[in-house]
Image (cartoon, rainbow over all chains, first blue to last red; front, side, top):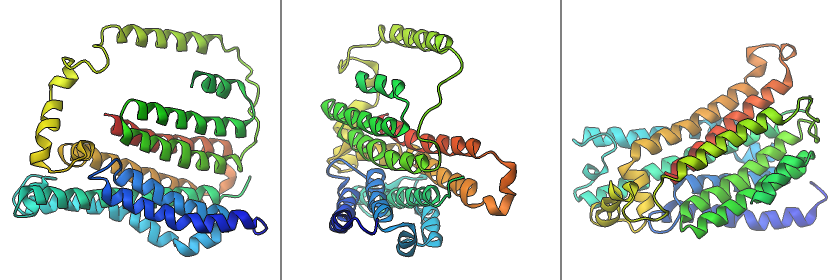
Length: 139
Length: 195
């Protein structure tokens, strides 16, 4: 891809906006369409575009395997941890109403946190899967 | 959509098939927008038309680019498909009309979600309220499925050097397994969004 100057420059221009849009979908999912799942996919697609245009080695520098693979687990842990936090604060598992003094504020906080967990896991999982597919040699 | 589906079956060039399945996903996404299911359409466009196409292209670089001509006749599979399709269509005859306010699905918990989630959760997007709060267990399971898919792909592809000699395995087999994992992860996500 070194010689495709148009591709490289347009990818460079697009990637920041893709990541920004992913964050918008992530944190605006309460009010408009979207949420953690969609945001994770869009965030991952930004990284995958980078990997496609600039090569897997560069993608691995930006998103090291060790970090990304830990993020896959961290997202699930965050989600389940919010559930346990609800238990510790006297509610049911995954009952967000007890997370803050006002039940509605608690629901907001809980949904924000678990959506962030979903987004983290989905983005990291897709980047991991892409790297493994792209990193294979033809047999 | 039907024309694209038939083209996918008929064409033997796998590159064209991958591109057409992306087109199919995009058409499905616009159909979901027409049905006012914007969240599902979003997922379908991002996963079906975007990520799956890229992953399939990645697989395509590892395998041949033309499908083999099958040795068996397509009669038996065709019969099975038509029978199953016929039974499914027969089953839909008893279903209430689309959007019927008196349908059981619209009388059970849906009114409560629509009427009271504003006070209980306080979010304008009811889909998010249902997915993240009322049905939080479901979404936790869904995230775990994606987590498992990532772990499985990592073990199948990256752990190969550690777990055994590559010579004993047939590369074709492994490719199929990976695709199944992938399809499971994407499919489960999309289905849960619809539910």
